[in-house]
Image (cartoon, rainbow, N blue to C red; front, top):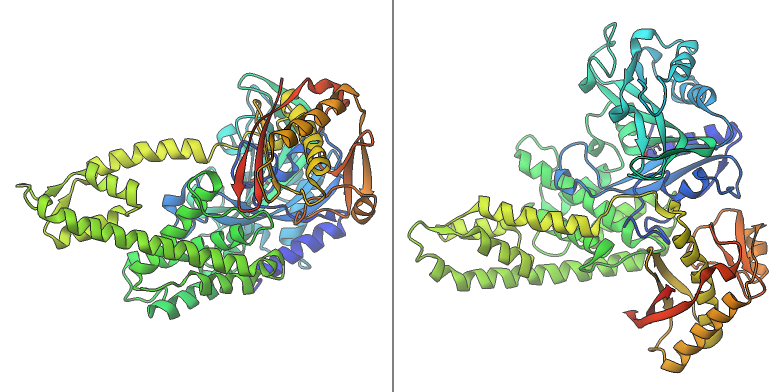
Length: 598
Ligand code: SER
């Protein structure tokens, strides 16, 4: 029976044997990308290359990428939903296209040397065609030549077979591959179009030849690319004949450890559905939290952005741990199980082991305090509440407890029930929904093509970021290192290591140096180099970032030299005038600068 680690390895081996270069997956926290909090798809870090930037490792690539999607966090707990998952992907950047991509997938899935799946249990979908692109007879033809019967091919509309990472960015028709999950052999004529529930998606081959610029405009990309994605956890569950991802060894050790901590057992026939659901929620959330905190560019729990997502995940895990009867702290030992299981393919988890443990323990303790405070507040309120003749606590009040103290509605209901009160759940839900819509819109925006945002102004800010970084090093010293950056159409936000607030004079100096480089109209040039040679040549590289063997190095005259994926403007003179808007603290030992181009 194939395991998670084996499938990942086989996938890499297969595509390397087919002339692909294995590149390392990237951080969960995208650099220079204002549109998204986490890496949400395997193709996300490759967007610039799909748009036409040359990739230093070539045109055929294979990787496994950590991804997080928390848009439907409330659904986690059913047997299929995950907030963290791995995406296996192979990429053609203007090299092979539909015919070969499909042939590779077929060989990997069905050949006795690789996965040896029964071809009779595989069906596919192809794009049915619309005003943007014709019915995909090329893909259908490729499938038929490999022996796929006509009745296993479903032609479906864009809602199924057009893949885009967001409202803008690279996109195109896809062909999706499904495996039969029903009993015995699938009946004749069965496919995703006729019996959707019985066919499970295992692979998605996207033929990215378009770029959506805005709602109305679709333009052709410079090359015909292939982006494929195989969800690792889901595919392993299917290959193992398991009904749920939680029944695979990606989760087995976590669920077992959680059982030991709670003296319950996952999947025990005496468990109510709620108990197993809590098991799954804790298992999913601790895996996600461990990967976020174990990332080289970890975010820490906070009340905004990605930090807020992490906080929510941790708190939800704590709450469900309590539902399982765990009183004290339990997250760090569980995280250790995740780290032990994943340290092979993700060595960063071992490197950041101490941080994972410390941050989880800290956040857990804080939340337990919050819960206690909430319980205390509730006890104070109870006598007044009991004066209500209907014995109902208003939903607005319940929401206030939630909003102010982070006090979960289930606990409010529980405590209210103990005091003989009901909670107006409808009113609470209404308030909660409104709040959630706001915070979702604010904290997890759609992926809009990411760094892909090659819009002119972002590119300018990107170049300005390099100038700013170098200017800071010159003014403050060599200890200055980039800790993060975020670019919007209005400004750049730049975080860097420095122990104290900058003085007015220092800020003026930095501004002047940047503007001098702009006035000198330095040429911006790019060179491909071996990463070690790049570092030896003095190019700035980000600490903790995983780089390919060969990287792009951008130089701005002799002033700045940095390892970077680009893109950049061709001359610094195009930037206009740079102004530091604000300098403030970001976290301990890290300062933050907001800068604008005028
Ligand atoms: N971009 C596609 C997906 O995420 C294939 O990798 O499904």
